[in-house]
Length: 378
Ligand code: SF4
Ligand code: SF4
Image (cartoon, rainbow, N blue to C red; front, side, top):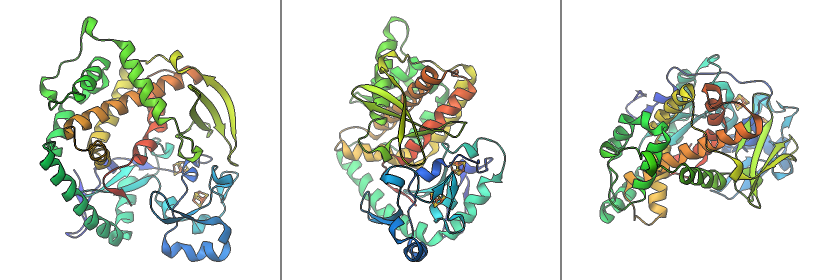
């Protein structure tokens, strides 16, 4: 863990170490994210573009920039260029770095941004440190609120007997991280995490031979993806920005997955409708497995992933051990990711090698960062 900062502001920057970022021309995936407009940024928009500043009430009351037709890109995007570049909100300037505030502050890198995969550009750690010091006050105020929420959450877990120590859970997952990229082991974790007794990864064996049913696992993966690709609100749907800069949307409608291209004006152009039962869950090739394992290490280190498991424990009414929910959530993420890569492979071709898995992460990671957590992104 790389903790930097003063005694007052301590930020875990581990995820940014050794990574770089360069903005890629004609990508603009982040311009679909409806940036929040902070109080000191509002006067510019209020004065010059009052009809493009809107009040949003969910998930909390805040101001944001209007989207084209309420569902397309930001209304300031013109032919993939920002019309207010010098005055764009802090959200846009910071992308793809986010700060999650839970029991501590942690910097995360949005791996859906293609600009973090080129190995070129600016040092992400340097960028993140500057951003954290600029927003020190807000980060510290949010941390003090968040610590109270965490205190209450852990107390509830103790009372209901479902507490598991987060560090121990993470170490146990880290020790067997390679196994998490193997389908029989994933099936085993999925089965054990649904049981009442606390999952013990050190004793867990992969389901072997006839006991391993790929159809069952395929069904679980399809269910995870169908759930994450369903929304009546088009703005909430995951977007996969491909290497040609096209915004691909996969939306579940009437039991099928509709593959469309979103244009800048917010209109969808249908490419293909796919019966999800036609998608076979493909195991990653050796080079794909290496990429997957690196990604799992990142997920296992992210506080927002822990925070999402905590959110689920709370939503389920403190009935399940934290460790079971955490491991179950981890393997559901892997299945969702692998099913999406298999879907990309089905409609666009390609393999589940290094490149294929990287594309899957580009498709998937933004959703991971959008998932509700106990804690907050600042
Ligand atoms: S998603 Fe990343 S690469 Fe694409 S425009 Fe935004 S910052 Fe640049
Ligand atoms: S303000 Fe500019 S950079 Fe920010 S989302 Fe809108 S178009 Fe993109």
